[in-house]
Image 1 (cartoon, rainbow, N blue to C red):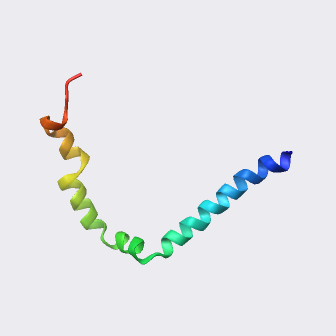
Image 2 (tube, rainbow, N blue to C red; image 1 turned 90 degrees about the horizontal axis):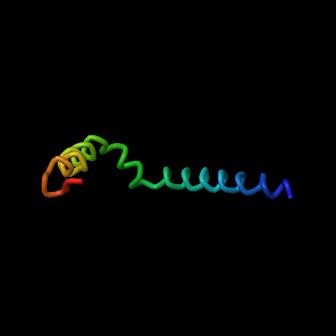
Length: 61
């Protein structure tokens, strides 16, 4: 029974490593790393910080 308790986390770790490697191999994911400046610009223009400063999106508690 102890082997089952050890097997479950090992399988979950192995699956997460497998899917992380698979995701890194996809070209559109690697392109996101190259366009980091573009994503930062979109975040600052349309991100949560700007919306939280807008009174339309806030409500008093």
